[in-house]
Length: 456
Ligand code: GLC
Image 1 (cartoon, rainbow, N blue to C red):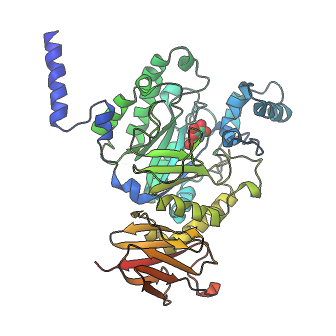
Image 2: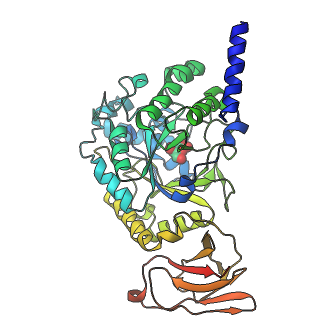
Image 3: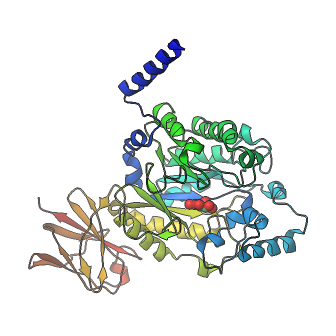
């Protein structure tokens, strides 16, 4: 016993001496979030799983959560809300009364999945990182997980390590790879009967396996709301991740580690369709943060959506500007089909964002927020900052002038253009005349960026 105590004490003091992280929030939160994440600004989220087979959800509901096609199985089983009846109706009509969700596994084939093409598309979109659902709440794994025997992509369905193949391709393009992982599993009997055993024998081994096999730079957990972080043993896992794992120096994690952690603990905080737990979040936060949402109104592919449910390229670019100028990242979701295609409309949106970033990327990547009271017409304009340089985003093609205070300008240019831009300091404020160029003299569409270099 004494020996054990001695060993415990030695281990404890060695980890303090080595500056290692302890399994408590104070220690874990003291680890600085690796800078690469805040510099990256734009990532691609991928929701892909058995729900991509029915790929269906209602589009006319009040709550955004009711539109999520990746919740198909749960909605089929849970008949407490009238919205869910629509799922049952759709399911029985199209697959028959006896069809079980589990039967979708054999139809999830990924026969057209070309990971290198996906990775190229993401790179061309200007994304710096990718986050794939390694396992959503259904429990089906996209990698050959020993703990999910016969409920993973190697054993049933595509018979392929989807997560590993994508991870290799994404890294080969020079992007950071990350995994989404759902802590809970809706219908796993072990989880439902004995959560502690589930955490010990299923969840933690899976999470460690993912990290050790693929060395991801992001661990993006979710499905944490049923239990506190103590039950999930999140602090223990994070101490291991930060102290011992092969990605201890580069890895970044989110804030979904238990029903006591969102917006409080973790490397970056998350919002989803501008919501945190149903509450709308306006403005930025001081801690690193990331907004995620789909190009449409669902994360999993929803065949029931039409063009009106999709954000336009202009809207997406404005969204990116909005989040980045408030100090956040944007994790924009695509929902691939069961056969492994990224729907062409999503590709088109990504390619437009990429074209815009090719011209204006220096105003996005590696920047930090700059709060200002600058005014253009009736609207507020947004900024980012890099050193002494300020980037001003104009999203309104009818804007005529902008007033900015609290700056000391040396020069002003329109990014991607060599045209002269008129500016003058009037009563301590810079007045910028927004040029009314015809489109062929503009460097891009959607939004225009001015770089204001300061004399310091
Ligand atoms: C949620 C949902 C979900 C989606 C996600 C993305 O909490 O349950 O389906 O994966 O968050 O942020």
